[in-house]
Length: 229
Image (tube, rainbow, N blue to C red; front, side, top):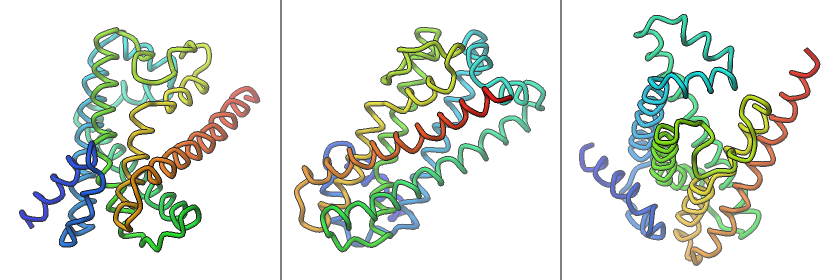
């Protein structure tokens, strides 16, 4: 098992600059790859959330954007709050990685007629998790440094979080590192079937745009419902 963990860590590293190498190791197991990726992402998401909440100004800004969530956190017992954050981060991490794997599985078959398996798609999405984790760390660091939740490599700085919380939440997803994560995962998958990583970048950008459209629809629905209340 330790040997598989080392392989998974190497795959996480290779996804940054050499995605074509990730699936060359046929002994890499999807269970190990997924488990290591979820451990990394959950740890990063939980730790950065706790760090950001320790800054009163940032906590106040987040309360303006998500008041019900912030009030619940304030009333929670510290240990229970941390456990809740950890569990929530794990669910979100697993859900987002599985969703990306499923989307890439469909797209590479539809766009490139690549006979990829869902197992390969899940390994590719898991390998790219390191990029998402790096993006989360960068986002938290910039928020703490500038004292604003608008700081970060995204378009959230274009609007006021308190005035347009739903639009702000969507614009945060227009993120350079999120796009890179999609492109890296797609490149891993298409490279395993002999295609150049350029095709992977095209598939990755397509999956990223589809994700933005889907979440844009959710944000619009939430905005409509909030106005109806």
